[in-house]
Length: 241
Image (cartoon, rainbow, N blue to C red):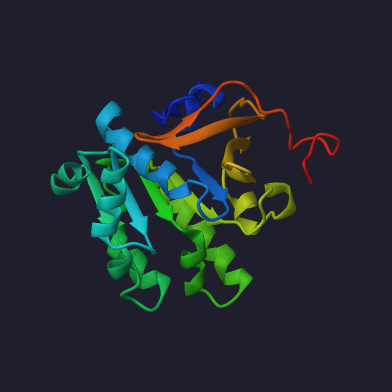
């Protein structure tokens, strides 16, 4: 029996057929503004609020105060309380970028990563994480080392990845192959704004719905709708490319 970690996000757990595989690492990819950080905030917050699962949030791009304001602006009103009482542990850019190499930063994190108290982790984002390294070989080595540490310590983790292309099948990177799951957030411009979609492309050990589903971002975070989108990434005939 495969153990699953529920995200608590409306509609997402349904297309994941119950949730994310426990102790796995899932890559959340999308272009700027697609909702990657919102999904991650929601995942960590819901863990505490709904499932009594504590979380660690690593951000190379935000200060702790900015992260709190972003969470509260979405309706996650207890974020500051959860951080204060230790249910959510935040490492912001001031902490993570204090050292010049990843090994030193990892030393700062290890006590919490190895603490059985925590169940969930977010790393936002891989683009900043990779600035520690000089070449692809070094990136691959440390990414594998880091994901192994997360898995060995029972953390079900989300890693965000900035994507330049609107549609994911045009830009596949190394991290897509090194992680257990790939979830893409897609936004397409319209005359009245943007349409948003989610595509779960891969989830090892888990049967998933591989259609593309519409989603929205509103008060309370992301919501995924169950009616599959009219276009599919799996067929050139249906693709909007």
